[in-house]
Figure 1 (tube, rainbow over the protein chains, first blue to last red):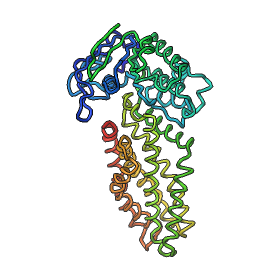
Figure 2: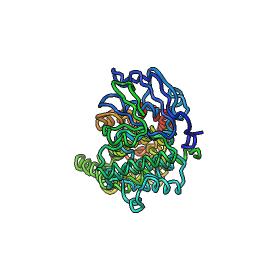
Figure 3: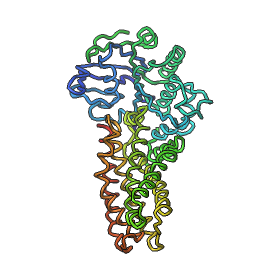
Figure 4: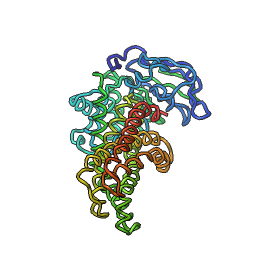
Length: 223
Length: 230
């Protein structure tokens, strides 16, 4: 049974003393992270602090050499496939096919998750993907439009936990405002959002809580 | 959320890959002309009808092999450009049907390519297809294509996340695919009767091609996930 947004109650992420080594250097050096359902958590920190690795570890993509915990109730070290099926990770790239239309992209990702055509239409609507865009190839969309489609993929997959690595990057002011609205809407609909950003002023307005990541450790948390 | 069958994922991957090709027309507009050009250049280089007729089966499969490497590079470049392959991993999508969907799309494209190359060989090289050899020719094309597509999909996935994949892929694929090149050439020689070989001499080579296709098909099912993961 894969998790769905409706399963994501209580503690969604509970990780302790996480150490992840990339090459010869520890990208995470004992990070802790606890996130409850419905939160929008900002990971703040300088470049190279370990924010991306922490997001990838939460997605079950970066293997810890020490430490562990649970994501969506699944053990990080032993149940990574189950974690992945309930998590949506959008990194610096959107994971879309430029030659396919928006609708075809959503149908493809929906098919990998057992979604119906009506789920696809609902996901597009939820992420404010204009109906006229559905027949446009993704390669012709603006950066903001592509980011919305990437988020619609998370909706159509019914990801309970959204992990977003610098989602505001490359967007203009309007695109950033729209993105913030969509993330708030997703959280209200039951998703839990963890994201990284360098634009602290904007991001802190969006986040319900901020976690600082410095030198591979989560140092300070404020509400 | 309903559990997703492997067949549904493989079908989605197949349809997606074919759609991408229909939209981009890279195979139709670039790779098919490239393969035909290779055949024409061979015709100029080996400018003697008897030589061309004799070596035509080998030239066809060499052109298929070179073209396949370009198709595989293209199909995995599409996956890598915007991080779709990593997104599939991150979404926990079962890699086995991903492998089979990509394999089926590659088989489809290669069969179209082979049809074009055989027609080109008939026109350019003056080879004749014996009525009795048609079954051997068709089954050889299918078996060899299944094996080549299995190898191409495995190593395409392996090279997708590696820098310098454009040069790495041929180095990985060509040695492994050499049994297909040899077996398919011998079987097609028998089917066409070039070099005076009898049709019956082709069937053992078809057996080799079938074993190769099954071995790499099954092996690819198990290996594809770990290969794209690491």
